[in-house]
Image (cartoon, rainbow, N blue to C red; front, side, top):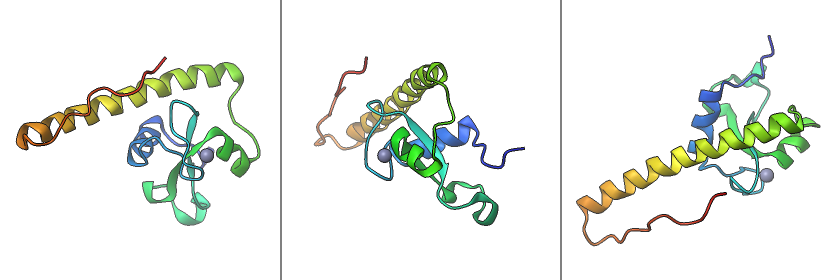
Length: 116
Ligand SMILES: [Zn+2]
């Protein structure tokens, strides 16, 4: 088995923790395709969240030499990543609405940005 395999659940957790932003260059989804990757060799440093970070495709390529997906897989992956991003934003909106309810002075940010 490939020890570098990261489960989709784990990847989603890493993206959320890093706010869907590349740790290397600061690019954000959905303008870039994101991958979770190990910061240090998982064989020495373990495979838990502490050793994982979010990287955009470009930074991921630089780290690993090549992208591990085909263009078709990339297209499908981007689409499912968009759903991840929307689910995350949805959760965030719900959280900020709850905060608004508890403190009336906070103004709502509403739905910002359009996603195609
Ligand atoms: Zn990057």
